Image 1 (cartoon, rainbow, N blue to C red):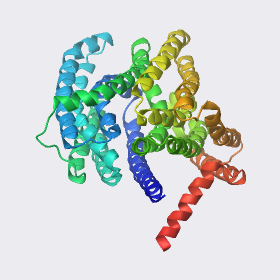
Image 2 (cartoon, helix red, strand yellow; image 1 turned 90 degrees about the vertical axis):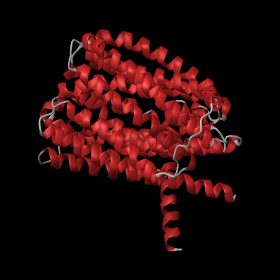
Image 3 (tube, one colour; image 1 turned 135 degrees about the vertical axis):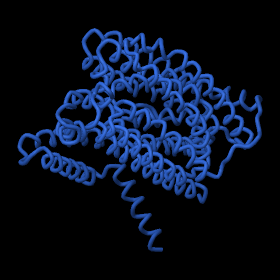
Image 4 (cartoon, rainbow, N blue to C red; image 1 turned 180 degrees about the horizontal axis):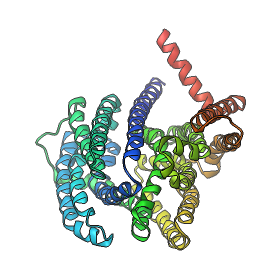
Length: 486
């Protein structure tokens, strides 16, 4: 019982630091993005958006697989961490060479020579990225998220200041290049100061092979997922133009901000928590259920609320030139609303050591996604992205299916936990959308009133219907208050 209480405290503390880290970082990045959107054009955003697709794919190859394997492995030690550190730097060097050599071909493919120097410059982030993946794996394993919070905040502040200064001085798309490089370098340096782990002169190919036996499946799954996630951007940049890609990326950014904040915080904390209890299926099942309840309760109202105020929000924050992104913003709110279930199911599968199941799921989902993309591309970008949202809904059932056997927690039970906050969020969205046509004042006042009304409707409904997520969170708050007074 004492061990369970201690683990619960660690999870709550870890969630606090991760949500604080992601919330603070994403909040600052959000403000920076608004300022950059007013200084840069959609076409300049689209130019860097094309390059970031290739950088993201390369980063997956360099970072993914080993970091999760370090967390999942019960007896990871200094030799494991140091070996992955040096191996990651070597992999980064190889991938940078590939990107450098491929840059002219990318420029020819998109008929835009400006992509070549941008791709070669941004490729530099692979080196600090490989180091950061090991540092964050250590933080997650030890659940020492306080140091990561300080490091991330420093990185977003420095990189934000660099990008705004460059954009103001007329550097155009290069302001976003400077932002990325400054972010990765600052995060790596401050993590070295804030986190107790430092690389040692230790290396073992045998350890690398053992970690690779587990990690290669996760790497392959992550690579497949990243390729398909960015395939829409690659196609928009090629078939349409950089301006349309910039609009899609901007529409995707708002809901992704919510998912990356709360969803990623829950994901980062739950994997080590699940892994530490992987031999007690009943306890893992209860933790998975609680995670779905809490994440759905928090994420869904934000996404459906964002859907309701999308046009007003874009007009107030970004200006009229960005209203073209509103349809994509609303579609992606629906698509991301299923992520809490996706993330939690997949983290449970990883924690149980079933990377083989994880890989099979990714292959099945991406095969379906490829078919949907092949159909959608013939009907224009909005229909193409709408089909993506529909496929994300189908993938909820695919991700949940293995856990019926692994944990005894199948899709029917999961939807029983998911539906209450989803139905309340949809009702709140409809009410807020209706209010938009009758509320007085200009766009800013209307936006504020819509947000207040949505928060009141959802919170009041959650209390009225005694939702599980609401009860749990209010209980955590009461427990925290008692601990402060005792």
